[in-house]
Image 1 (spheres, one colour):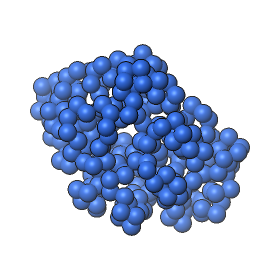
Image 2 (tube, rainbow, N blue to C red):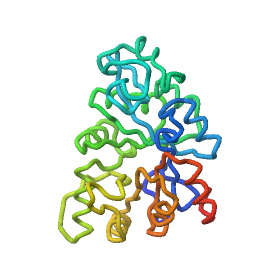
Image 3 (cartoon, helix red, strand yellow):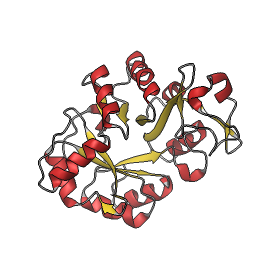
Image 4 (cartoon, one colour):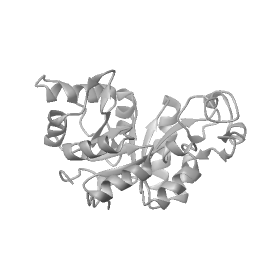
Length: 256
C-alpha cells in the first residue's frame, strides 16, 4: 500500500484495490447477484454497489431511483414495496438483490456502498450494526451531509469516503487553498476528471496521502488509464471492465 490504511476495510495485500463497479457493469447485469458472482470468479473481493430503500424499507442493491433504465419494469423504487420490486428483471433475466442477501452470499467480499437516497441511510447503518460488518463496508455518497450523518450514527467503526463537498475541499488543499475537511473519512473516491476539469493528479494524491487518506478513482475502463493511475500512486480503481483491470494489475505484478 502507499500508506498504512486507517481502517480495516482497506486492509488489502496489493498496492491497488481493484473494485468491481456494480459487479462489472460492462456485462449488462449491473448490481445483480449474477454480476457479483462473475466478479468473484475473476478473483475480486472489493465490490462497488448502490442502495435504495423500497416503500416498505427493504434495502435494494440498485443504482437508479427508478426501475426503468435496466429492468423490464417501471416505477420509483421508493414508491414500491419489495414484493413489486422483486418481480423486476435486469436485462429481462436477473432479479434485483437485497443488499443483505449479497452480504450473506459473498462473506469474503468488501463493499463500497453508495447511498443514493436519504431513506436508505438508516437501514444501511442498522444492517451493518446487526451483521457486525464494520470491516466489510465503506459508505459513500455524492452528498457530504449524508456520509457525515452515517458517521455520526455509526461512529468510527464505520468506514466512510468523502462526498462532493469533501472532495472539493481536498482538491483545494492540494492547490494550496485552506479548506475544512470532515474528520474520520478514510478515503476520497473521485472521478479522474469532472466536466473537463482534472481532479486526480500528483498533488491531489500526495495531499490525500499526507492526511492518511486513500484515493480511489472511478469509473476507469481503459487499460492505459488504469496503468497511468497506478503509476500516479492511487490506491484503488473502480471499473466496469473487470477482466481488463485484472489483466493490467497482473502484468504489473500488482494483482493480489
